[in-house]
Structure formats: structure tokens, C-alpha cells
Image (tube, rainbow, N blue to C red):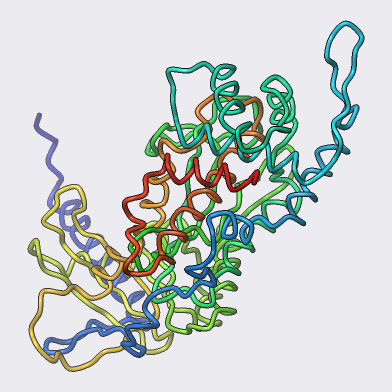
Length: 446
């Protein structure tokens, strides 16, 4: 379909207008302090290349049992605090209706939540979807009774499990998240921040629909993960997105970045780089990271970084090539790489923690872009580990869905930390999820 031609006057005016826009963009680029790095120089990561400091250092010892590790993440005191909160909230406390006017009261003790955990872990380890929930409970209780004869019957366990959940509204989840991070002396050279859309379709003011995410609908869980020396991911921070227009509560991205940044500040390693996608890097979070001197790398788009992205993308002509720039005022760097992958195209990243040096030798490393490719994937790896390990039956309400998520995260952290803490002569990598959960369930009630 042809388009009407412009008059000579209108055509030249349009060309001049486009040229002026390009000039304005370039002026903004330079006014912001950016300058293209000349040929023969390259961006290099700052900091010591100490092999030991590259990996996270945690407090789990080889001698720690699966139960010991779980209890470091969720100690008895916190278990009883959560359990007591649920008892107070429940009408009737620990008294249950047995039918026909008969009631039964369970004695409060640490053993009750441990029994609940043991049954949950047993079922989550098996993941036998051919069994209905009632039958799965009966099988789990029957097996566990061989180690703990006093464990309540399956029907009572069902009632106890129904009343127990980890609350997202108060301090319970924050304390669990703090326990995850406090288990580490340092986070190593990288920590990645991202999110998990945990599948849930029930009624809740916090359900989000994101078509680009697997499942497309659910509860939005903020996350930060590290990569253990054994190669497995470990969650060190999580928080549910509880912004709601009706209630007036708001959780902003810069709050999440600050919480993750504060963890890095209190760790022993100063060379930790925080990786994130373009969703999180806003002007407020960017300014805070610069103020604190926290190294970061984030992907960016033209919506928030118009001049920077447009100038760099204009400079990159061919696939497989890249352009670098440096900001002398802010000490930030940025790189745009034209990927051979058509789905990626031209991708731009920005960050702190790099310096410009004379190129020592030719290599195929694309600075910052390749660092981002390595460092950002930890949360993706953790969320893949979540698949097929959560409670396999439907839960009622967002509180229990959230509880399913956070409890499974604790289980996976326990599993991965136990594998990471094994001696070199112990082949813990061969221990399956099912076997690990069965052994942990037994340790819970011994």
C-alpha cells in the first residue's frame, strides 16, 4: 500500500526534525556524563580475583544433620511462635470436634508442629499424584508411626495441618528470610535478585496476572539467590508483594533493592555484585546503590534510560559486536551487545564495579554483558528447583499458598546446603529429593 508523498517543504522539515532529535539525544547522553570508550581500551571487573572469596561462605558444617540445617533456618523458638499465633487465631485453640458431640484436645508441645512438618515433608518428597490427599496422609502417618508411635492419626493430622501456616502479614516470613541470609558469613562474588510468580488462582487482593511468566497468574514473590560452591542455588531473601490499592499498602522496587543491598553491606565480602533486570533499576534505587558503593549490574531499556540506550544501540551495527561507555562522574559503566540470538537482539546493561583499562589481550568476553549472563540466572535455577517439590494438593487461601511456597523454599535450601557441606569423599549429589525428604521426615520425629 502506497503512502502519500510529502511536499518538498514538509519532507525537508521532517528530516530536519529527526536530525534535531538525534542531536538532542546525543547532547543528553554527554550531559549525563557518558563517553564512549575508545578502541584499545576495555572494561574490567574491579576487586581481587580471590578464588575463595568468589564462593558464598555459610555456617553449615559437614557434621550437621539434615535436621540441624533445617533448624538453623527455622529454629524451635520460631516454630513455636508461629504455632502459638495459629492457636490464638483459631476459635477453640487445639480442641477439635470428633463428631456426635465429642471433642478432643491436643496437648501443646513442639512435637505437634514437628509431626506436621514430618508428614508434609514425606508427602512433598514422594510427589505421588496418583494418590488422593486422604490416602497420601494415611500412607505417610503409617510409615512415620514406625519411628513415632504417638503421632496423631491421619484425620487428626489433616486438621492440624489445616490450621498451620506461615503468615505473610506479620514478622514470620521476615524472620525466616533473615535466617536464610544470616546463615552466610559472605555471599561470594554474586547475588541475583528476581521474582517468582507462585501459581495461585484463589481469591486474594494480591494475585497478579503476568502473561510472560510461567503459569501467568499467582502470588508475586521477591527473591535473592546465591550460587553455592557445588553449583546449586540457595535463597537468601524473599518477600511477598503485598501492594494493594484498596488497603493502601505499597511495596516499591527500591525498597526491595535496599533490603537486598543492606544484606550485602553487612556481609564480610565487599566485592559482591547484585544482579537484577530492568524492572528493579529505578532512579531512586540506582542513586542509593551509588551512594552505598554497592556493585551492581542491571539490564535496562529505553523507557527509563532513553538517551543512554538509544546512543549505544545506534553505535552497534553488526551482530556479535558491542560498544562500551563510562561515566566519570558516577563511575558507572554501560555496554550494549548485538546478540546473534534474534530473540535478544541489542541488549544493554549498566552497572558499578568496573574500570577502564588498556586491553591486555584479545578475548571473546563481552564485559558486563557476559557477567550479567552468568550472575543473573541464580533465581531462575532456584525456581526450576521448586518445580515438582511443593505441596501437591490444592490449598485454600493466599496465606496457605504463601506458606506452601516459603516452607518448600526452606526445604530446598536445606537440601542444597546439606549437599554443599558434604566432604569431597561423600557423594551427596547422588541422594535424590525423595530419599532426602524421607530421611529428614524421620529425623523430625526421632
